Image 1 (cartoon, rainbow, N blue to C red):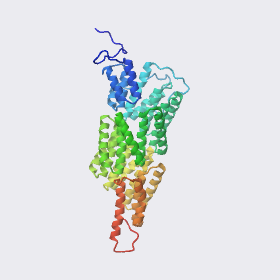
Image 2: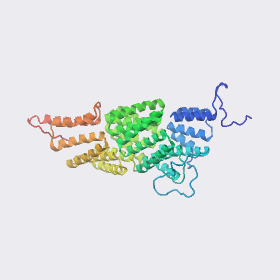
Image 3: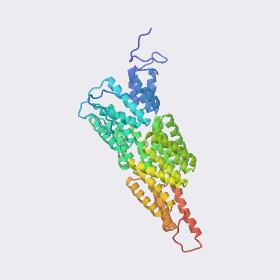
Image 4: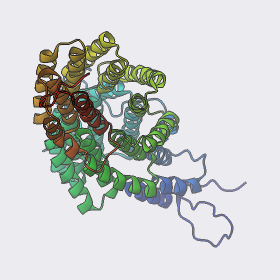
Length: 514
């Protein structure tokens, strides 16, 4: 019988017995180096030398972290097992039953005590479990666990504790709790400052930028993404710099800066492809698909969305599934494939309501359903869906979506002959979007306003052409953009009216027919 193998004995080598081998400890250190360098596939390959049945806790946690990095959340979840909150709770503290702010029980002045290996592994496992829960859309569970962990334990400051708090803050953002998230991020930033962790500070700035993004404070978010990106690049943290680039690209596409946003996302896609980063690749494809829909490149957008939907299903990422369904619905509306639009939007709304019934995905999909009803001339249904979307977006604090719903109301009012009411709604929505620095929806509003003003008071061809200049300028170089197609339709209607009136020379003011 062979002698028992110590956990740090050399692992058996394949082939030549004289080939150099790593100890178990050395293999784990190598895997950690790969993970810190954002190379989860290489980490998993290194760990494969320990055998698939290796049962020591540290190897298991490294495997789970690598799988999570590769987007294989269900496999990581199976490895990690049942969630157990680590570290003993304070004897005089009980979990709060009320939805109060999470205030971690640490002070920056407290010296960091040396943590036992067992406690460190327990915290690492808890951190990974929270990441899996967040990645799979179980945000309320993450926040509940965070409340139980932070409110009932006296914690020494440390990087693992700060990372746990950051994941909880991310789930707060997904549940639209920006005030609570900002307070927690403030604590985390102070903690990282006390630990002199440049990377931790950059991580927190990225989280704060995400908070500002959800609050539609886009100029501030843009600056923080740029700052975090610069810090990561100085440290050589290219993977995290990539995260900033992806978020910044999506932000700029969302606010209507299509050229800059698309350039950032294409650069990010190239980096994701070379790194094999499937998780971020899906986000990049969704952002690019939105840009392509807005410029009318539907042939490019469709395979991106179908691929993102397939990856979201395989990786069990419900948020990406709902987003892909929403964008597919928008694509099918433009392609006038209304039945398919109905199906994918209904599926996306069902998923979104499971994630957060009052969250951003719900009101975005509801507004897209209102657009579909509007296109099919079902005005009552369009108004009902827009009202539901706007109520949720206002409660959520998303002024951009609230303004977009206002445009839907304006379309309904115009169809019912209430031109003055529709114009008032347009002016209100345009003012709000101007304060946000948004340009895409503003272009849509400008086009609608021009059409209605021409209908109300009559306009010359030159006046209409002049009014279209701002819309055309925003989509320079994108002749297939749906907005430009609509703009050409407005101008064509004026010209048709002009031809019809050639028998009455001297007419200089024309009413545009509906």
